[in-house]
Length: 229
Image (cartoon, rainbow, N blue to C red; front, top):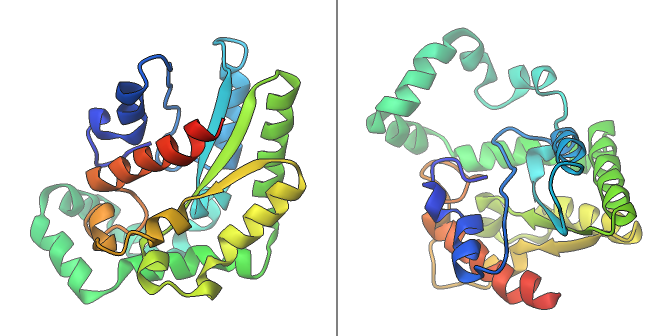
């Protein structure tokens, strides 16, 4: 976890520096969904001594079959026909990123798209919750501490409207009812009124965190997750 950020600047590395007695392992990969978390855990659980398993859940982790949704995502049609060109521009042209950010509010578009499964409580949402509960039960059988941290989108922090927190509300309710420890990062970040919320995410990206964002997540873990044990 930490696309666009140097490995040493991710919150996992920052926590390893702050708590050298803890042996942290970052198993997250961009594009992972709950089914991937389950697969990775099944693979690692017999290979390393896991004492605590923390899932940092992004609101688009519901999509277990990415190929079925990619055409409907914001910009999906353009990616379908011009993906090599767009990929090159994203990697090599700052002007392209600036222009893209000025023309449209990508953070808003992606949030509104990823909100849909929660508004309609579609099967993909229930499937994702089921995966997380399976993970929690698997951890419990192995005496592994298990917890989930819900990560907000930049647009949620920018607007600060209660109806936009439906994903966190649903997940917290359903997971807590199943006995899963669940932390919500939104209240902690929303209380930081002296910052530009866009600065804690990558440029023109309302989902993935910047260096500054990773530092804030590290502080959240230190204050509320690690010291809550």
